[in-house]
Image 1 (cartoon, rainbow, N blue to C red):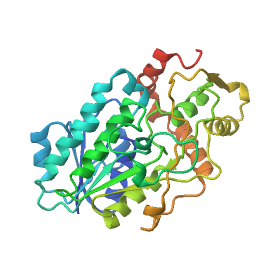
Image 2 (cartoon, rainbow, N blue to C red):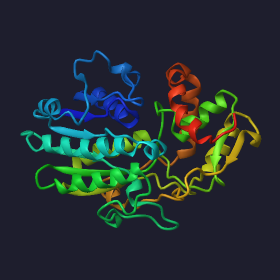
Image 3 (cartoon, rainbow, N blue to C red):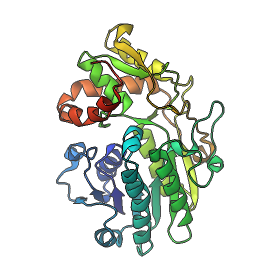
Image 4 (cartoon, rainbow, N blue to C red):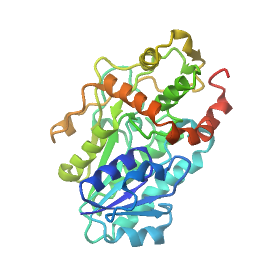
Length: 336
């Protein structure tokens, strides 16, 4: 199998690429290497004969066209992904997430050997819900359910991908919040861990009641593999951990403080800088479970193992901190 992966130097993409190479697959990885793309995520497979890296923007149609033509499987991770950054530079998010997806889909229509195109979407296309869980059919066309430039651009790209299913063997994956090693430290989970490693307080926005269904990255990659094998063309599939009990932000903060043997003074509640901050995400996963997917049931243990990874891999995250913290200095979400 010849795999073409976009955004394969990012967090989830690099996990997928590492696993694919270990399984003997042939992978071409296209990545623009923005601030969150990091070739250090792929050091263990550098030099592997089955692996090729191409530094490119997915909007560069001519270059992408040449790379797509022989692909049998395309997995499209490439995206701008941070909500806070989307508030200050929405045009960049629409360019990459929507126009980049359109360009890649157009190129894919000419790939003669293409068997499956997996488009990586997000649970944020559904917006927030105070109770229950969204099913795949609950997503409305357009971006009315989304609350940020990030989620709106992803919602429109989700629609666009499905609209190509008569030309390309499209399957859309909608995962919840991922966690694991190699996550860029602007994201809440690694950011909080790193701040505690550095003996700094962690900022919890609002009252900490926001709920996120934390999904282990290796579970996400297993689910994507399953969609490559069994996913039905033209369909979308939710991917979630369905943590019971649900994990609030304050729960996550308390776990980390306890893990580092610190007290509650290291948790600093700050005013939520997002007036319409989504309170709760929740997905129904019956559809993908019917294909055989089962998420890990030990999320707390895996989250704390992830914290341990950051403790042991300071050399990976230390050079990234300055850039990662820039967006938060603008909104002053923690007293320094």
